[in-house]
Image (cartoon, rainbow over all chains, first blue to last red; front, side, top):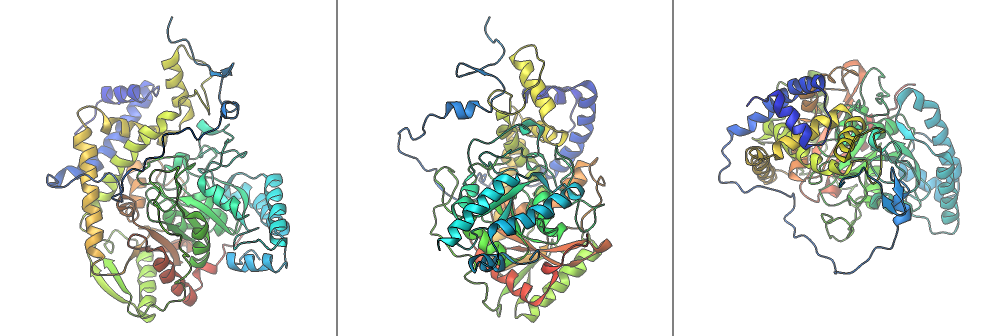
Length: 95
Length: 483
């Protein structure tokens, strides 16, 4: 398959990464090379194979439905870019 | 002392021939002196390290010391370390002081080991050369024109240059074994689930695994005894009885069946690497092992499969870096979406952005089945290949890397060439198997060569035995680079 410049820009938008026209062109060349490598996968017939999502056949553990964490809001917010009155500050979303 | 094993250092500390403060000071002094040249450490915090050493001396004095009490260990900067800068090699986390310890760090703290610093690494563990770190490339101490390998290149360099007696690493597609091979040290990637990933900043969750890096297999066993163990906070952590991974070190190798995959011994291997690996295999025959040819027919697909699955998981894991709760935030933006886009564009380096774009693409509408599901099916085929091979042999061997360390900058403009550096290591992560690399000689420009030893699930003690018996008969693991 071949990627287009629009594909690169669309994916960058989905990934929430700002990309300039120049960067998109450069990314297109590199991603096309990588997808050329990835395309080798398509030659194998795997219709009878079950996908493997985990190396071990293990069941997801469940824990008791109870609060175990102590309040560490101040500690966790001490590394945040912007906080006020115990809240994380972000640009206004709703007018 | 610089070349002493962990076992020897531990014995010296227990006998009070040296204090942990003296030992730690010695390695800190050396790390400070060599770091401007090698760039192996991102953070050295002498006050905290020496405070830990003082506490260790008290523990030893009270008779409650354990095998690694008071021993300095370098920690890869991917492990969250309370009160220390934890950057993961990224501008995105360049201001992040972790509020908690990773499980692995907690276990080292519990036995009184000393954290001697945080080692440099490829950004978010994405790389095969340690050239993608925000903090600059690490140099290979055997030849500073060469890369140390990645992504645990800082850890490998620190151990090889004797800036630390041992270090931690993480391995998603070969990131412990490949730098261990390229720097001439020993490194072990355990069975997936054996070492908790809690507090280990996630790259590709179904592949990432922490493990030890040290001079010898014996040292790796001592490290793994501390690192491995069940952790309820990691839902993929395996509940198993604790093991002593050093228990089988002295077993003779008579009758050991070594599988040599025909797909690993092909013309793509550099001649110097092939020569050293074949000599090591010859040594194993002298030690009583027999070799059998096995086949891993889907080996060639491991790199393509990996570069679908790892970026897919990375694109999801790295979505948490958005400039809201921690880490870097772009200074100027128009609205929330613009803040996300600018923060991530400025905070991530080009390799990380490239992999997020690949991952986002293969998971996007219309491509999910063709790429992601197809890759997960091929992943099962590869695991089945290993299962078939292990019916014929006890252990699999081959080269860790197709070449010795390459020059800095040699492959950085060609991602595909760079990705092929891990061609022999990736399949092990896809299958979740344990594997290790040990030094077996030198090749081109006197750069080290590693032997790749792959074991069946939970065969760590056996692999360490196999590696240790070789190291009893060779001295490659004791050699130090000239300064």
